[in-house]
Image (cartoon, rainbow, N blue to C red; front, side, top):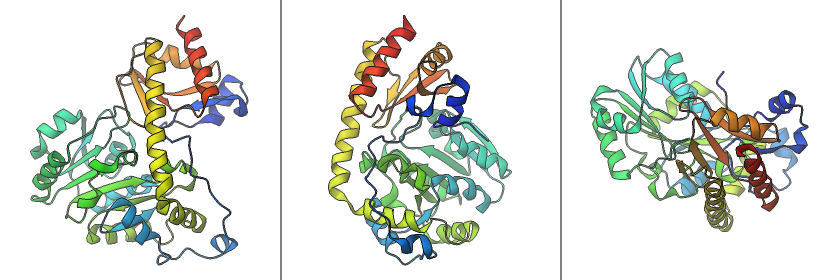
Amino acid sequence: MLEHGGRLLQASRRYDIPVSEWLDLSTGISPFAWSVPEIPAAAWHRLPEDDDGLVDIAREFYAAPHVLPVAGSQAAIQALPWLRSRSRVGVIDPGYAEHAEAWRRAGHEVMSCSAQDLLASVERFDVMVLVHPNNPSAEYFDRGLLLAVHESLACRGGWLVVDEAFIDADPTESLSGDSRREGLIVLRSAGKFFGLAGARAGFVCAAPSVLQDLQERLGPWTVNGPARHVLRLALADREWHAQARSRLFAVSRRLRDLLCARDLIPTAGCAYFQWRRDSRALEVHEALASRGILVRLFEQPASLRFGLPPDDTGFARLDLALAQALA
């Protein structure tokens, strides 16, 4: 299995620091989670039902004509490659590594390259996979350009798969509203924006034919009852959405300012994280980890991704640790 952020228990054992003493900045998950209310007993005791209203609420939140709830967008990432015969697949690199891995495991011919190279050679591929905004390089793409790419692929029976796990903080450039088009598949995550990664819930926005094939592949009850109950409430909480978006951008700017002050000017960033390409990435990662601060290390390219500290204490602790690590 591929490595991901959030392996706090593993870090605790490796560096011999109790879990409670860590500042975990290794994921892109918002530290300002939607507050989960008491969950009714029926959500635990009864099988989930598809007609509980979740789909309607999700369609409104994502402005998508058709959606399928899944056990996190990861479930869709692993299943979608099995819905096509052997294809030439272009995947953004650097990017979320599970995409390329899933298509390779399903027997497809996969080429990983930069967004610029992908977009300049659409005719080479049957399927193109982009992350929007990208993780970790935080690239945004023009909607018009992406729709043109989709049209080029779709006229040949191809797919454009757009992973929008990090777009909820600024959904104006989302393609979910266009996802009725054949060959356009948009993945959305409830874990990042709502801070509910443990619920393992996400949505696929696509044409009904794709969603039907995907649902048959995944089987029934892909999202558990408690998660469905929480999602219905969280997706409908518009006042919280507005407050969360404002807060995420403000805290991300503060994080960028902190890194700049320590001469670690971010290469890129978005509402959820700041990313720094740096030949010293491994050394800085180890120095921070030895002080109980976990950030995400990437080997190719050598870089660090800093998630958002949750409060003033977290910012002060990161600032002090960077000062010591870089001294």
